[in-house]
Image 1: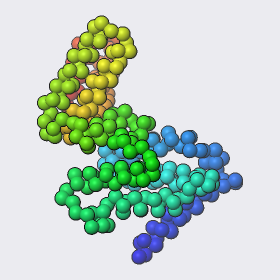
Image 2: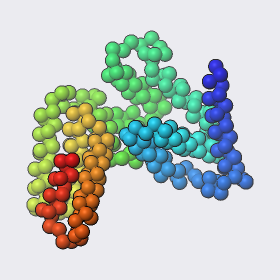
Image 3: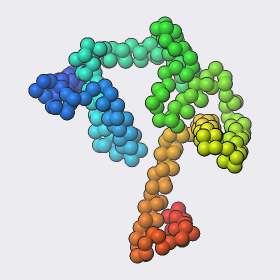
Image 4: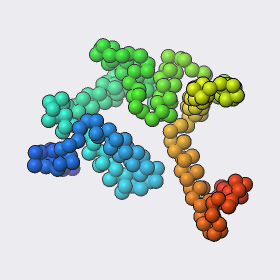
Length: 266
């Protein structure tokens, strides 16, 4: 009970601090912010937390969790000023949603595994949208502003729910689709304009994301890892060039590729 009381007091104090910053005699920068201006900070803080998780830096994870929490409190305090909603509304809505969407924990529904849990979750979400007269499409609720790779993954995931997908565990037709898109891209590059090439390239990336999904690999995280790998190897190439004393322009691509292969073998 003491720990819960201390946690509650700290949260109340956090909200008080944010309201003080937004007060007429508070911080000019905090007072200038609005819903739209905070969008970039929400994205930045989310990615900083992801980076802390991937680097397994626990102290940094703790700090970045706080920075991300700040954005929620910031928006909620701003909303209260406008009469839109309060932080209490946010917490109450979240609590009710968690209880409602976990009937196997808080109700009398039985589940066998996490797949059952996810199916129930989506069914409940769909019913909620219909009850609010909202878009009840399987595609509803996927933010258009979501990173494109993640959005493609979610769209394909949703399309699979009613059965619009290749059989689970069979990647052959998925890989064949990727190869088909490669062939269409080559054809467009050979005899079509830039817009057609861009469209076919988009289709290829979309198909590659679908293959990633069927392989059980998160495309956003996997591409991020590929970027990190390239970054590290290119830095090694830079060190090799610097160590040689020769300028970049004096190197052929084959010579630079030799440095790259050395970096790969480290």
